Every structure is written in structure tokens, then in C-alpha cells.
Length: 319
Image (tube, rainbow, N blue to C red; front, top):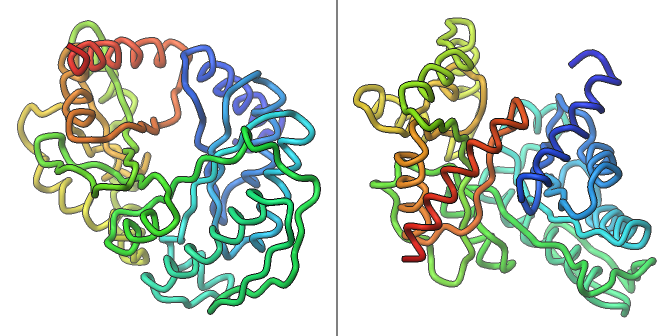
């Protein structure tokens, strides 16, 4: 949005809707084209009472000490908990523009080292020393200290073997863009697991599909942009979703990739009745996924519809 006041108001509105709908946190994106994620998180904190910003963090943007300092400062000033979504970086053009030519798997090695420094600084009042391949700190102490109950939850985005290994190495929740529920397998033992997915659910399935197609019409320009983005990305999930889009193009499955194919969003969608979408969510839960990161809701009402599908899912898995 080119209007700064409208943008800030939109962030505040979505944050309030999310909190009122019962969400625990809210993802705050970070890349070369977006407003700074930490400043957006400040708006979220100021307009909610308990919602936790899940801040996307890329090592190329700032030193690990700066991240720890921000987390501790939010805790000190507002008594609020921040979550961290650790991102290795999947858009090569963004990285090259910053003179970062680190190969894909090596970026996850760097992410492990980066996150460990952040975690060690936040977990102890003692000075931290670390000498590694990518970072060295000596007797580094964090002030103000962070209250233990505000220690951040840590997520790692990535569907590759390197991404999953990084999540396991730092004790993080591994977040992926899921396949259709019937194709998903149980996540690795010892690693918390989550998925990122959009939801359009209505009492009547036909109405849900009408809303979905109206919101995400097929767009030739978007399709071309998507194809170009795939060519400059070494992200494993980009490639996986592109392959899945071809495989799921026909049929009546609730699993829908048209928004992704048309470069309107970066996650798959579940579309259908409360019952049908709830059944699909329950299948993800049954496989072992416990965290769900939703796409940005266009209205407060949309979150109420989404809640109906989750209520159905919870009722199925708790029987």
C-alpha cells in the first residue's frame, strides 16, 4: 500500500482481528521489498495485549546481537513475548543484491550458528563467547536481560533436508508449505512441526469456492511473474509447490494452488465447507502438525469462518 497511514492502520487492524479470533501469534514478513519487520511488530504490540509477533529474521539483514537486543527490549518495555521465524533466504536476487552468494545448504549452516548466538544471549545473564565459521563474539553480554517467561519461541522456515536439520539442531519448530493432507507424512521425531496454509471456508462449499475464485482470479501477468520467480529461487518449497500445482490442477480436492500459481500468495489454500476443510485440517493434526500459520485475512469475518473449520478439526482429533 502506497499510503503510509493506511498501511499502519491495516497492520493494526489485522493484529486486533487475529487476537480477537484467538490466534497466539502473527507472522511478520521480511524481505527486500517490505517495511521493516521490527517496526511492523512495534505496531502490533501497541495495538494488542497478548498477540505474539512472529518476526521473520534473515542473517544477512542484521547481526545476531541486534536481534537479541530487540527481543530483550520488547520484553523490557512491554512485557511481551516475541517469536522468531528464522529464514535462510530463498530469493537469490535479494541475496545477490546484498552481495551474499552463500550456497543454499550453507545458508542453513549459517542460520544454525546465528540462532545459537541469539539463544545464548537471551538465555543467560553471563557473557557469551562463540567462535564459528560465520560469527565470532567474545564476552558479549546482553542488556537489558530477558525475563525467562518471555524467551522467544523459535521457528525455522524450510522444506529441504538442510532446513529440517537446522530446525532439529536448534530445537526449533520446522515450518513447511504442506502437500495435500493425504500425501503428508509424519514430521521427524524430536522436531516440532507446523504448516503455512491459507483457508477459505464457508457453511456451504460452493459459496467458499465462489469467494475463492473471486478473490484469486487467474491472471496471466501473475502467472508469468510466478514463472520468473521460480527461475531465480533456489528454495526447495518453491519447486515442490510448483510441481504440486501441476499434479493437483484437476479434481475436487480442497487443496488449491491457484493463488500460488498466479503469484498472489506463497502458500497453498484449503477451500470448501467448514466440514470439508475441518476434515483436512484434522488430517494434518493427526499426522503430527501442531502449528498453523495462516495467510493474511482480508477481513475480520474471514477469521470467524476459519475458526469454524478449526473447531470441526479439533472435535475430530479429540474424540
